[in-house]
Amino acid sequence: MTVTAAPDAPLLQVGTLTKTFGGFTALDNISVDIRKGERFGLIGPNGSGKTTLINCISGALRPQVGSVVFCGEDITQLPPHQRARRGIARSFQIPRPFKSMTVLENLMVGLDFATVGSSLPEEDIAMSILTRMGLASKAGAPTDTLSQVELRKMELARALAVRPKLLISDEAMAGLSSSEVDEVLDLLISLGEEDITIIMIEHIMQAVMRFSERVMCLDAGKIIAIGAPAEVMANKRVQEAYLGT
Amino acid sequence: MMKHRNSIAFWAGVAIFLVAVLSMTQIVRNEYPFFAGYVILQFIALAVAWSILGGYAGYVNFGTNAFFGVGVYTAVALFKATGAPLVVQIAAAAVIGMLLGFGVGLLTLRMRGIFFSIATIALAIIIETFVMNWRFVGGAAGIQLQRPPVTAPFDSYVKMLFFVQAILVVIAVGIARYIQNSRMGRGLQALRDDELAAECTGVPTLKLKLVACMISGALMSAVGAPAAMYLQYADPSSAFNLTYSVSALAMSLIGGTAHWIGPVLGAILLGSTQQFLAVTISSEINVLVLGIMLVLFVVGAPKGIIGLLRPRYRLRAGGKP
Image (cartoon, rainbow over all chains, first blue to last red; front, side, top):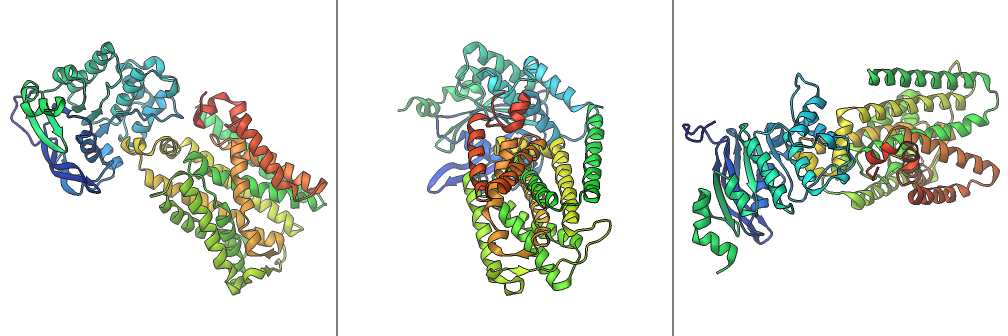
C-alpha cells in the first residue's frame, strides 16, 4: 500500500452531511473523502460533532441531509448491522462491552454475525485477534474484570472480529496512561499497515500527530481545517477553537 | 463432539419423560395427579416460553396473560364455530400468538425496559376488554364448553390434556435449548447487554427481537389453548388473569434465565409448592408464596437456582461470576 499510488475511488465518501437535533445543528454540511488505507485523524473541541459524524458513518444516527457512500455503495439508509457486514467497525468513546460474556465471546458475536463463513474455526480466529491485541490471557475472563486499557483493547479486538475495511476508533486512548497510549497507538498503526483504513478520534495531540496521515478539525459542526497534521495544528482557527480567542 | 453427546443425552431425557408421562396416564387411576400435574406442566411451558424473550433478550414481558388468554379464546372460538379438534385449536392459537408476538416485537422498536413492560400490560387489558364484549364467545359472563369424547389410548380427557401439555413442554424446551445453543442465542445475549454495540457488531437486533417475540408468543398462546377444555369453561377475567404473567416471570427468575433448565426448575419448584399449598391450606395462599419466594430469591440468589448451582451461569445471566 502506498500513499502516492494513483488515487482509486475513495473508500468512504461523506457528502454534504447535515445532522440536527431539534434546533441544534451538530453537523453542518460536512463533505470529506477517506482514501483506502488512509490513517485519518479527527479532532475538535468537545461538542464539535466528531462523535455525531462517526455515528452517521456507522449508522447509529441518520443524517437529515447528505449521503454516506462506502465502497461505491450508498449506505445512508442502512442500519448499523448492515454497515458492519459491509466492513465498517467502530469502538465506543465509553466502552460498551457485552457484560454477560467473556472476552472471547464478545469477539464471537462479530464473527457469528458480521463475517461470512471461513475455513478456520471461529474460536481460532478470535484467539488470533486476541493474541494480536495482547489479550490472549484474558480470553476466558468476564469483561468486568478488565482494566481500562484492556477494555479499550477488547473493544478494538471486537471491532476487528467484524473484519473491517474501515475501523473507527472513538477516543480509544481516553483515560489511559502515556505508556498505555503508546501501546494502543502502536496497535492502531500496525492495523493501518494491514490495509485497514482507520478514522481515529482523539484528544491526545501527540497521538494524533504520530498516527495521522491527514487530520480534520471540526468546530461547531463545521470543518475548519483539513490536511497534513502539522498544517492543521499550525492553523490559526484550529488554535483558536482549542484555546479560545 | 461434546455438543453431540449433550444432544443425545437431552433427547434421551425427552424420550424418557414422554414415555413416563404416557405410562402414567395408562397406569394411574386417580384423576387428581393429572389435574395438578397439568397445571405444573402448563407453567413449565409458560416460563420457558417467557424466558426466550424475557431471559435471553432481556425484554421483560408482563403480557403473558394476553398471550395465554388469546390462546384460550382462539381455541374457544374455533371450537364453537367449527368443533375443530384439540390439535387444530392449539395450532391456530400458536399462529395467532405468533401474530400478536410480531406486534409486541414492533413495540421494542421504540420501547425498552420498564416502558416495554408497561406497554405489554396495556396490551393484555385491551385484548381482555375486546373479548369481554365479544358475544360469540360468551362475553364477560364466560362460556361453558362440552368436551368431545376422548380419543384412545386415553380413558379420560384430563389424562389426554396432561399428555398434550407434556408435549408442549417438550416443544418449548426444545426450541429454547436450540436458540440458546445457536447463533441467535448469542445475538440475543449481545443485544440484551447492549443493543447499539450489538448492532455495530453486525447483529440484526430488530429481526432477532421480532423472531424472539413471535416464538415466545406462539408458545404462550399454544400453552393457553387447551386450558378451555381443561376447565370446560372460559371467562375473560380468568383467561387474562395477571397471575399468569407474574407466575411465568417469577418462575423464570427464580430458576434463572441463563439456561433453559432454569425456568423448568423454577416452574417445578413454584408450581408444585403452589399445588401442595392449594390442597393443604388454601388456593388463596398461592400468590403470597409466589411473592415471598420471589423476594427471597431476588435478595439471596439474584441469578436464580442455576446461578447457585453453576457459578459460570452467573456471568451469562448478567452478573459477577
